[in-house]
Length: 217
Image 1 (cartoon, one colour):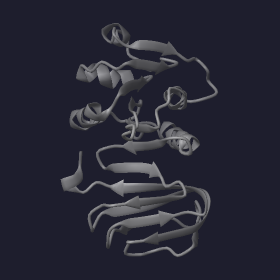
Image 2: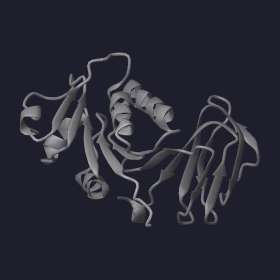
Image 3: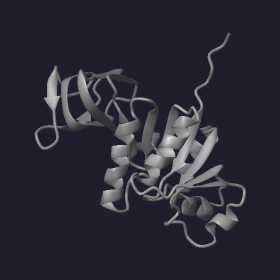
Image 4: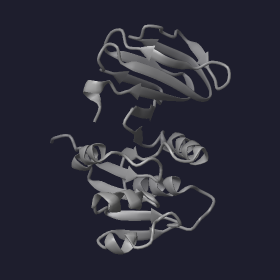
């Protein structure tokens, strides 16, 4: 019996809109296309048809939902969670474990911070990645292996205290060290050899990989 392919969901969030080129790349890969509230404006701008539009819908411009007539519209007015949290919860509940989010950054700083919090919340149950024109943000979990070209810039961003952080393959490797906000992080490190291996004993650590020009989607 062959291995079952992991179903892939694409979410447009309501931050800085992705380029059409970036959107098209991930649309080709996804099985489900969801717009989180104002992300529907980006879909409308590009003439794209999402499967679902979800959120409290206070950021959707007039006329957009009418034009996206093939989408299922799921109104979620609960103000105790962000629109992206609601969207991730819904997508995960449908069994999707590979999720790419475009438009999660840029725009209002409080919204971007809330989106990163949502990324951390669902990181243990799904492979979630925030992607923009500059790079890709993803949780490390307990361990991750990257096969990326030498010279690629890598940053490690702790959300709270992260202990037992160990890396190999970077110019400045960490050996069972502690990273913590306002104390120590690890930004703009550089891939020296491949593969790169990152391990974390405890805590939530995010990895940001900068796209090189040749790798930019």
